[in-house]
Length: 523
Image (cartoon, rainbow, N blue to C red; front, side):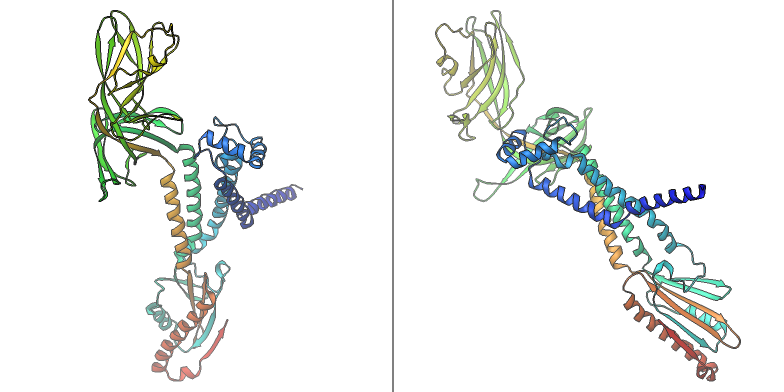
């Protein structure tokens, strides 16, 4: 009874292993993964589009909105709700499950095939004509009036074109030889499986560790922080990166930029570690991060004067900012006088200020009408207010122009100095992806596996020399991994060449032995 139960248990285990390593399961999983990837390509994904863009798309497509509600009910909650919806296919548990199931299928299949693989790489034990590995080719046999030692020596000296591996073994049935070539081709499928597994592992690693960020640097400026788009927050780099010389190469017309170059210097604890000039598609790589030349813009350096209207006390602040497309120096400044205290922050800077329907903007990068937007607060204000000041029109004040009767008078006057210096600013795209190299290795392994599979055909030739009374029987056989029909033709030529050498030796020593030959060829 126990033996029956054990047998049933083994059968169930074998059935499960057969299913997990089956080709039909692999095909089904590939189809499912392909369909999910198609959906992820067709529908905008949260990794690329902003929340506002996804909300607008979701509202504009009712059918997808309904599908999204259904899918979201089966999703695992994420800190980003869009990633736990149909707009986060590549982060969904069902996509990850399908990928992991495919990896398990490849692993089980590879492990089970390893037992067969060992068979092809084990030492020759003298076994011939056994149809090793389930593949067989042609077989020939012949009877010759030569001694065993002569035939053995002939085989030892025989040069089989392309068959570099020769093994010899004494057996009860005679002297056995095995010649083979292309054995490494047997490893092809295993290398392909390993490559696919590496791609899957790399993709998973990328999904967990991928990070995108950005930082603007003026010439000579350094920073140890950057804005992470993945975390939507400012994060530390763990080292200092400095922008050295920044330069542009223009086209012949002098108007269009051909290429940007940025000299970057990496340092830590006061010591320079790395220095490189980067350009588009030639990043600086350090500490698992890549710094790409992604953009180029203008920055500005100027003096902001703050004057106490009652006492006449004044202080000058040296500030720097980008244009309206660049985050300005948003550090809060405090100015105290004997009379009062003011807090202000540089909110934006426009080199050529204009007002559009959308609000404040700049007409160009030239300093035609420079203006700074401040966020200011002093005692007596209920909340901070925006203030626009102009370099060429210092008396013009938007806040005072729109002041109502009885409004609080401003105790401070802000003046934007006319001397404004233009600075080049480089935009660095920061990318961190620990899985990229693993994916590349996986692709290389897949290519290598395909090459091994299709360019190395494992072919084997066996020869058994069996002595008898007055003659020797030579059995000649072979097998091929692929292209068996072509190999049979090749094997036939090899046997005919072998016969000719025997006939030459036999005819020279004993011409009568040729007439006594009895050669049988079977396929």
